[in-house]
Image 1 (cartoon, helix red, strand yellow):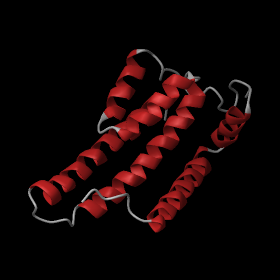
Image 2 (spheres, helix red, strand yellow):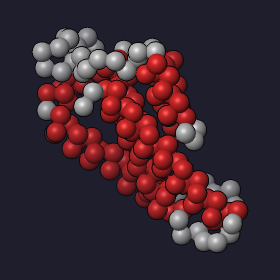
Image 3 (cartoon, helix red, strand yellow):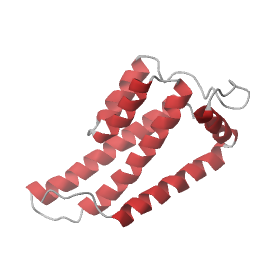
Length: 152
């Protein structure tokens, strides 16, 4: 899986979960039919949101994005459907081209984030499992902290 394909998949998934959450909120607040869709939609969106942030940070390091590009990528997760627009713009500009430059046999890491990425790319399956576990722990801690502030 290339940085481009990984980033695109997670950007689209994040946008789809936004749609799911917004649909649940419509049914709850506008149609006033039920509020049962919001908790599961919110949970799925929250998990995918954390995945998108993690993948954005990982791709940011690999692609050597500027600070402003990386921050914009992270910020795009906070606006419904903006992750797809952000991904599209990066793809058009060639900022998602190439493979994992720090994979075994690739470039030498120059700083701490690159050394961490190099270690993770040595064993992608273990790295993916570790990332999934870390995101799950953060997700559970956020659930235990309570739901986001309600405006109702």
